[in-house]
Structure formats: C-alpha cells, structure tokens
Image (cartoon, rainbow, N blue to C red; front, top):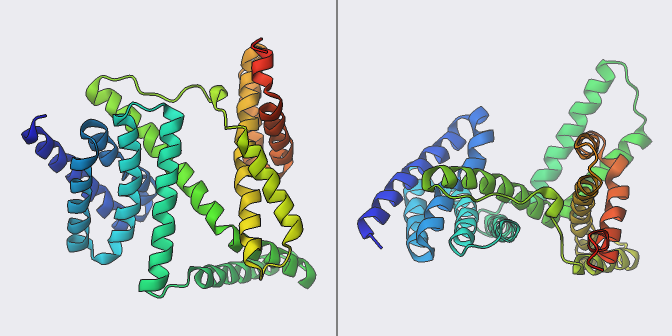
Length: 313
C-alpha cells in the first residue's frame, strides 16, 4: 500500500471534514445539510484503507478540531467520526448495504450515548432537565399563540398534552437509535454516491422491498409489551427499559410493514404510486398508519409471507 497516497488522501479528506465541521458550527442554515455530510470523508478514507490509518486520521482530526473550535467541538467530531469509521470499515470489508447500515446505526447510537453520559459527568449537563425546560418554554409559547388567535385550550387538555410530551423523556435511548439510524442512512447513501464517482464502483442500497428484519425482533417487541404491562410506574428503573423495548422494535416493525407494501405491489405489478402514497400518508398522518403497518410487519416476519408468495414454501 502506498504510504504517500494514504497521507495525501488523509490530508485532503481531513481538510474537507474540518471545513464541514466549521460550516456546521458557524453557518446555521447550511449546518442542516453539512451535519449529514460530516461522516462522508471518513467513510471514503476508511473504505479505502481500513482501520489502522483511519483511527490515526480520526485522532488527528479530533486534535485539530479542539485547537480550531475549542473542546466543545470534540463530541460532534467523535460521534460523526465513529459513525463514518464504522460505515467505511463495513465497506472495506465488503459487507452488504443493510448490514453496513446496521453497523453505522449502532456506532452512531453508541457515540451519541457516550457523549450523553460523559457530558453529564464531566460538564455537569443534565440533559433531561434541559429538555424539560425547553419543552416547558415551547408549551408556554404555544399556549400564548393559541390565545392570540382566539383558540381556547382547557387546563385539562394542556395537562394531557404536557404529560404526553414529558413521557417522551423516557424514550431518549430509542431517540438515540433513531437519530443514529437516520444519520447512518443519509451519510452511507451520500458516501456510496461519492465513492462510486471517485473509484468507479457500484455501491448502492438494494430496493427497499428487499429490506427484512430478523424474525427475533418480534420476540423483543413481545417482551417489551409484557414489561410495559408489569412495570407501570415511571419511577421504576425497569419502566425505562420496558418503554424502549416496546418503542424501538415497534418503529422497526413499521419499517418492515412499509417494506412489505413495496414488495407486494412489485409482486403484483401494481403501480408504484401505491407504496409512494402510503409513505406520504404515513409521514403526514403517522398515527393513522403506524398500527396497521406494524401489524403488517409482524405478520410478514412471523408467517414469512414473502417466502410463501415467492413459492419457496
């Protein structure tokens, strides 16, 4: 392996990473895009050269980010670097796209969780308290806006809304995984496009209709349901575990259900507009379709509907 080329690529891709990091910190509008692009330079580098050079580059980038942007840039560098490294190493190992996505999701989630824990102990930042304050301020602003436009909200309705939002605090672990899921998908998709252009490769995600979860996710979801029946007191530590064991597999089963909609319409040669409209309706009115799609996902996995339709069984 040409060491000079490794150093050259590391310098170029590292400079791009630092530029994206600066844009993320100082240009609010562009940061909405640049934050998804941050892992891409490390995805490219790790995808070419493997773990040892990539870890060295990440360590150097972490040092440079601290010098240029202060120590407060380190958490973002760590999270994006860890996720980018994981996706790049999966590409280097020639893993399948969805396996790469899972590896990236896990790494992003671990990075976010690590930052969450360390900032509480080192910087004494109570994220739950900060989020509660933010929610309280948002609710008060919303109530003020309603009063100005003449919409009356009773105290009882306000308390129900407040309690519903406060319950989301117990789903922070699930939120971390979902953020990791989103970051991994977008950065991997962009990484594939850039690598294909630079290295003349053919990396791509398989059609969404081929997305399949392991059947064991049903048992995890079932365990979550049982635990939510047993542990109903929010003060109980097991309540947190139960809530997340129910919520996270539930979201994944919704994705499985959506995937089956794509598969079935393709199997029947129906118009592509049907699954697209399903996704649009789900995004606009999630509570309308979340339960039917979840049930569909469970049936698809539990009864292996795709294998039965394809004649394998």
